[in-house]
Length: 234
Image (cartoon, rainbow, N blue to C red):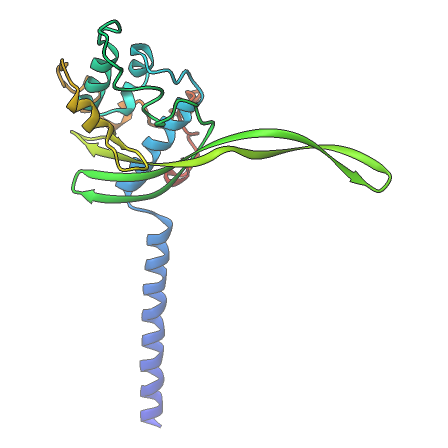
């Protein structure tokens, strides 16, 4: 009888251990790594803003996106927009460098995010060109018009590389589907370099982060998530 009771206690202990381990793993699955969550949030808010505003590559459009970019990457992009247009040389960048396209996409989705270094994370992005088409369907005695979405062009994949400076994750490079680096392209053709001094808000408390959710009672800016959304849903 003692051996049976002892066996039951051992079995109960193992069962309890499995429950605790399972609960721990479930909790870990529900709350992703904070750095990865923040990096994905930066990428999502960037492309949400970018695809809903002017995507022409000009000094004005680059300036409006500086809050998402690392200071040195921002300086490279800004310097490229300020080069003389009448130099006779072919432009280094044709179209939109942030989507690697001359025909602007209208949809995006984020994929796998992974840490590639202590202060480096990459996030996969898929860009899509979607259009609506109207067609008619016949239902016995009636003909009904319906609208559906189709791909206007094949989707395109990019890899966004983010680095962390003093405190915040910011976009530091864009890798096209064929493996070409935008930063590498700009470095190779660089003729002038702007000071890469970090903006003041990068050294301020977290509440000063321009991409943070709005404070309670304040309206959200176009690129901000709602204040009640969970971090990994933003």
